[in-house]
Length: 107
Image 1 (tube, one colour):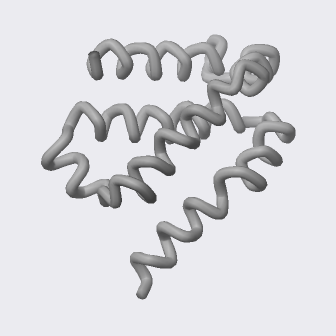
Image 2: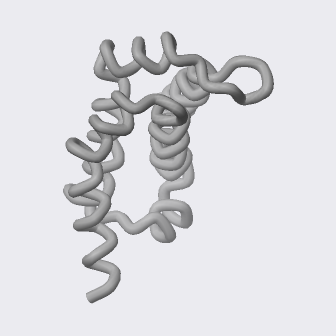
């Protein structure tokens, strides 16, 4: 089941691009409107906050889950490229989770 989900994440990443890596705004918006980006944020937050798995351990012990985690990050990055609405949503909904995770590593 996880390898199929990995492929889905990669396909979603490709939706955000056109030739030359230029952002495809309508597809980025579609992913946001279908709550795909929120789901990607929730996957990352679940891995970090609820499972308490650090990326290094995740990569070593759960490689398929790590690829999904990494794919979600790539999807979010591509969906926000040149898309201010998606960037705004990321800052509002996802940045606090990332900041919390990073601050734990600094303590």
